[in-house]
Amino acid sequence: MSVLALNSDEMTEGYRGRPINDHGKIRVQYFNVPAVAVAGDIASTIELCELPPGKVRVIPALSKFNNSAWGAARTLDIGHRTYQKRDSASETFEAEDADAFVAAADVSAVGEGRGFDSITKFDLYSKAGVNVFATVAGGTIPVGATLSGFIAYVTE
Image (tube, one colour):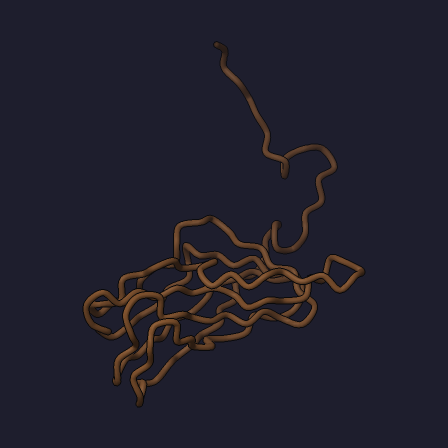
């Protein structure tokens, strides 16, 4: 073995990054779901927010959500709807991914400032924006349930 001096791709000669890679500005999309008036079954969905069109890098480690106590065995997924890809000349679409950002989060008890799943980044490149939604994955959504939070992202 020997001592190494390595470079990341970004430190190679002539590298030019996109704004989401080099000194991008973090933006935040907030969402708030007021107290639910009618109970919902498992697989109920909640439209949370829309991310802008173009190149968007979601930063899950900075994204957070809060929830009221939904009751025993309740879980929540957060993901994105199908969207049209911008980097293709044809009409190609990225498939819906219901748990792209949060998978089976336990919302049985009150949760404040809960982080999204621990992936470093999640890149989206859309023509018309990307809708983010939540799905009640385990149990039901009770009357009075609340959900709020924000998604941190970098865009060009």
